[in-house]
Image (tube, rainbow, N blue to C red; front, side, top):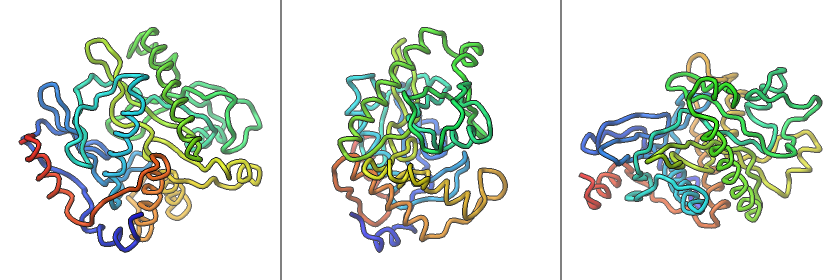
Length: 317
């Protein structure tokens, strides 16, 4: 595993943003810089980290971890649904087909955790679903829930029910059924793979798009940015004791922000010490290695310089 010393040395080289006009028209998301030209998208995964829909800081090697994990899962799940992946010219880059993104965050939950738990304990429905009384934090659902939210360009995404989505006319009932079936199939596959690796896939978020009237999976899949992961062997003991699960995903940072900075997305951005950035990076590296069964390899130094070199060598500019 990458050492703590290497992570600290990488801090000055964290990839915050890119500027490659030759790649096409740029859209800057919370984490990815996306360049569009013709029928192609170049997605550069930076080291930016967001929580509660605010971009907060950069984390050593985070972009490479996310990109390589997404590629791993895209390859594993292409028998379930087509995806946009075409090429991987650099550890931080995916080149994909341009698909018309459906403006819905497709969320599948296996456990009552995260924002679903926060809504539940406040007496709210979860994406239009009324859950039974008396459930506990981190309790497993009898079967996974489909809990979509709207995709917000600015501000917080909003939980929304299937019925509300259909009423808005964003998609029709046939497409909604197809998306739901596909999301559950992806979640089931991810759950089974993670269980073999000693992990629990707690919940996750998918993005889908359309190309030539066919459904495509886009953006990312089963990464610690878009999903929660716990350890299978300690889940029941910690749940019975009412303790937090061992986390190797972004929920670790969310909980730190809530507890140490009283931050849930509003007001000035909190300062994140280097020690937390390094600990966060270690959790993401751990997630990569335990999900894939592969050692994470990276070198201290300029990411932007390497990206320029690799894109040029592959003929992207």
